[in-house]
Image (cartoon, rainbow, N blue to C red; front, side, top):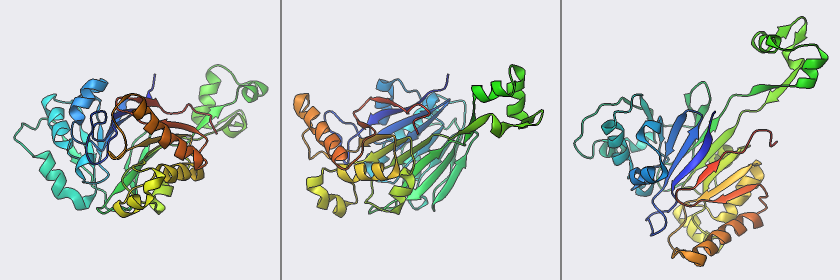
Length: 312
């Protein structure tokens, strides 16, 4: 049975707090694991979340600020220590290759696993597999930053009533799916398009064209909401989003499930009701912006399943 879910490893911005680790997000997509922005402490968070190095197939770094990349050194060395039996692919902004190299070879260790580097230098598709295409889009931040988006190819959903009307049953159902036509009946007459699922990951950025392009039509959008609306000027100055802005983006893009994360340490994080109150403020601001779909304010070690098909 295929699993598609987001495993949240960390949700803090800039510095970790007592209750929030540096960034880290694992997307389980069927049998593949894509690790986004492993900040400091990601290796330990993986252990706590039940994520093994063997679960990783791809590393995606949006930019080279420490809270999004300092964990690369430990994760890469763990991949080699555990002798992961498959190749790993790493994507990151090409302009930050010197940082990637420093992190990859931060200390001495024995390389046992093939790590293919596929840097990102422009908008477009950076990888294609049988189950998805991975796109990157430039964002607006003080250092070069890219967001990522997975698009599953469209498929077809068979319609039982139409199949019955044409007397197609048993092995003939598979045959018309493979061949596209059976006894003069076209596949289009007994099926409908099943749109592929879409997932987007948007970290440190101001509002820009790339944010909207990544979010468009997504089943799940994981997006930074570093600040509350009262601190919008700080967001603009430092290249970040507010919860209100994230909510508007999701509303306008027709997102089904919005996941807010990357929270500033300036807000109360002392645990108990106060921490819950802060989460409620972020959710309330995204709702005030007009977003009425599923909404999750991310917390460390949370698992968030992608929405089931058929929600559109």
